[in-house]
Image (cartoon, one colour):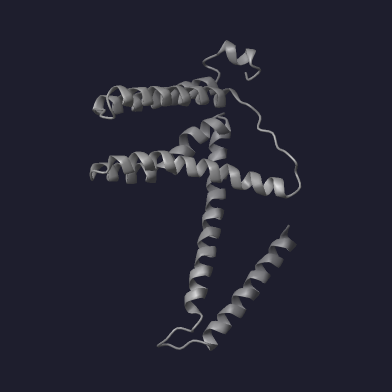
Length: 208
């Protein structure tokens, strides 16, 4: 392990040194080199993606350790800490858009951002996984996945019916109702995860 780490470090140092020497001897203090635009844009993008990937891995590892410490499963952690971290910026931006008088844009962003994250976050790794030679992969059902699936499907139907009944003109109480429903769902899933609440039908489905 130490030998491999030293080899990788030396390789990175060698490549960085060569690039630095080339830039120094092809640059002037007054003007950048001719290839600076392409070099800085592409390399900057690669470096940014690499840092995001490394920091995300470390953050996920730290959050998983919290789940182990409090005896919480990956789904419960994903629905709470990870979900809040991923959606906080979207929440702030969508709230600002709605307050500026663009509710349709805010609602579209609320639906589009999770959809993009879900399809790309699952689709790209699954495609790479299958291209590497594996013919199929299995997603093991879980009791919390079942609960969340039925809850989200049910309240999406309720939301659509509510919008149709009120002709897409809902008031503040409905927003408070959705927040209360979300908090209740989080509490309920945590109670199920900690085996405080026991559901018989989950055992009948082989999920408990």
